[in-house]
Image 1 (cartoon, rainbow, N blue to C red):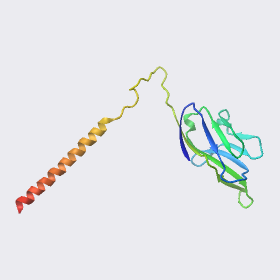
Image 2: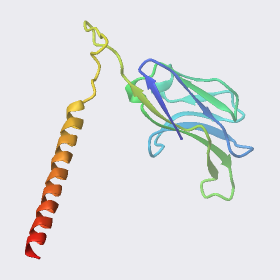
Image 3: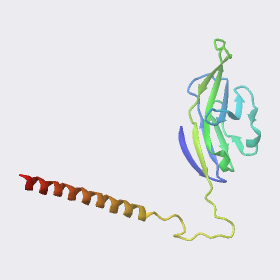
Image 4: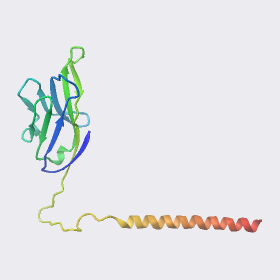
Length: 163
């Protein structure tokens, strides 16, 4: 699975490929448990089934079994893992189908990098590095090191005077 960063309003193409020959159906699902079916297509059917929230934003750009799904006008709600899955009719399986993971699955992160209405962005307005944390860490480390050196020197002086 590859990680893809996109901004709100952009598009992504998810290229699904089958690792096995003679698949009978292909689908694109979303979610950690693959619980949201986005699109589904049977091999010999010209029709593709697309879930309602994606109907106006998802297009199929190639032929079965090499499926290129173009998802446009991305929103932050589109963030999540997208899985390419294939199915083959299998009489030996209890369900009658054999599920095969395809290649091309994507972890999509959609960010909103827009400026609020009425606001402007100038160079330097963005996040500045927090150097005070680094300086504080260095000062504390130096103080601890100095304290350890003083304790060691005191032990050496006490040990020398006792002998």
